[in-house]
Image 1: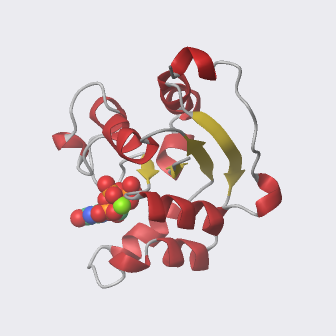
Image 2: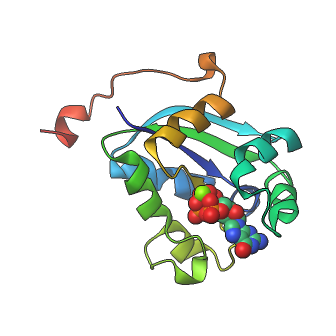
Length: 149
Ligand code: GTP
Ligand code: MG
């Protein structure tokens, strides 16, 4: 089944948005496979965002992501990668639709509250990057027959 790595960034934690953000994914019908509060070391932030290392904002991005604890999550479900990105909304919160996390809760790209993997391959890769194997749970959710025919 498809998996995605979702992370509540330090601004989301500091602003007390953790419960509200987790609820969006939970209520949609996706299954939580991993969850932790974590102070990200600089090296991991640089590895996670290595595709952006040539961008002028890269040093600011690393400072932002390491500026306080983040909430790391693995979520699983049919179509979860693209669906989670729809729930999150556009990178620039001013372009994000109302009803999305960034559309409702943020105003600036540099403080956009949440991360979501951009492909199923990156979902797997990022979950393996941010979690140890024994921090992840495979479990059967009782609601499954009520979500999928
Ligand atoms: P993520 O889910 O966090 O990966 O966001 P995204 O996929 O919508 O955007 P992208 O991967 O292109 O950029 C990763 C992150 O870098 C963004 O979410 C922002 O936090 C940050 N970022 C991207 N562009 C800018 C920018 O122009 N300025 C600043 N300050 N930050 C940026
Ligand atoms: Mg991205």
